[in-house]
Image (cartoon, rainbow, N blue to C red):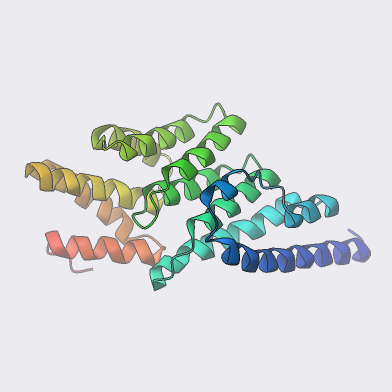
Length: 229
């Protein structure tokens, strides 16, 4: 690749980073608007238009993915990014790279399952977009089904759907949710088999590189077992 082309790509990526940075300031300022105003967005923004013009849609999606993980990761420091921002990040990623399945799993789960959000309508729209572009992905449908079941209070169906996904995708967010659901069933029934299942998943998350979920798992293991770390 010629030096001039490399420089052009570098400049383009820098421009996208600046655009997304500025866009985030605007989204934070707009986060108090009605959710209806957010939901009509298809991800076609000034930033994504610039990425298309420069021919670097995948690179721009990668930048947004980093932004999304940082925005959501702020929860470990007590900083809760508005649901509208997480949703907007996801929509923009879908617009740039609709076949990036990680966006749908991660963003949809956070908005649909994490207690500070539980924005089931937003989560449903994210999953439905994923299924539209990846209709043969059975795990995505199970993920979506699990979120719907959870929103309806059907823990048994939620567990069935989520554990099917967990066999392939060892996502710490999902593992944490499965552990919580089993713990909840244990508290409701007193059946130690449910607690043992929760402990199984907490042990898996205790080894996670995600400090937020590993710390939560270790806390639970210390509560219910003689876990020493």
